[in-house]
Length: 363
Ligand SMILES: [Zn+2]
Ligand SMILES: [Zn+2]
Image (tube, rainbow, N blue to C red; front, top):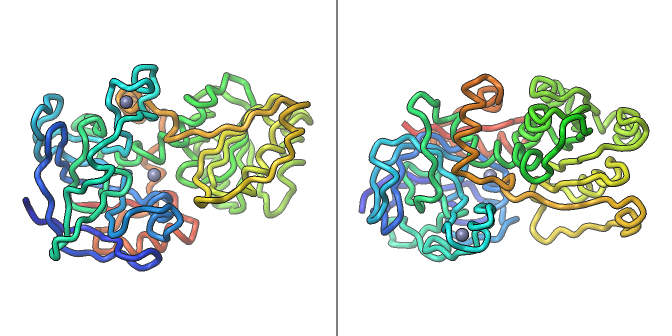
């Protein structure tokens, strides 16, 4: 057992408490990681506000990278000091989903579903959110949650790959499998939306239309490969997208903001046989109201993508290659860096809606 600093959520809606806690060594198949960087994702904020039900007290954070500090029994793929990307995706390699190429949907149960390797000074167990809990100097995760990063890969940028990047990029590339020259519309030009934009641009889609309500974000979307932008606070998005797609509507729509209104609107931005993919997390318990007729006569499809339908161990190395080749943008996604002590400030900035990614840096 050893001591470390962590940001603990004791009550929904209240600031996180930065305090010294204790962490156990890794058990069989587990790895202890010394964190280098953890980005703040909107899913963390949903948990902290009580909008995604989670066991409390807990430690948030799941978009991370760091160095292997210690390996548990039976771990052969990692050694102390290895730089690694840390993901919330756990895979057993044996269940129906793992064996059919959908490791992100692994159906196995894990000790970390119910246990924690971390507790506070009173001995109270601190749940690791999404089996990761990386708003802390160390975490213990299953070995399947780690992907090795090259030694020259900056870990603050590598961290982004494990959630924000794969969620947006993978929704386009893996879930929708967007073919070249098809038209795409992406709703929301935030940290996830811009990665959907890069996914569409790299896939050869045209036009790549981005809808948002802030001109500043729409300008950024152009840097990431958007060919056209629509400010939905100034013009009618349905009309604008129709005009840009030969009067038909888009072949694909990706909703990267967690809003049921945006999902409902996205369906109307697609044309006949169009596909809408829900990417951003709405509030738990939100409901959609959709006229079923649009699915029959026009054969529209509505689906979702979980973590970009990503096969972590093949795709993270590929995305690192794309970054190193100058094709995938990561540097431009980081708005600010903060020490763990200032995490509440960093979260408050994210909530204002103008930040792409704020990253907590560990020394
Ligand atoms: Zn996330
Ligand atoms: Zn599995």
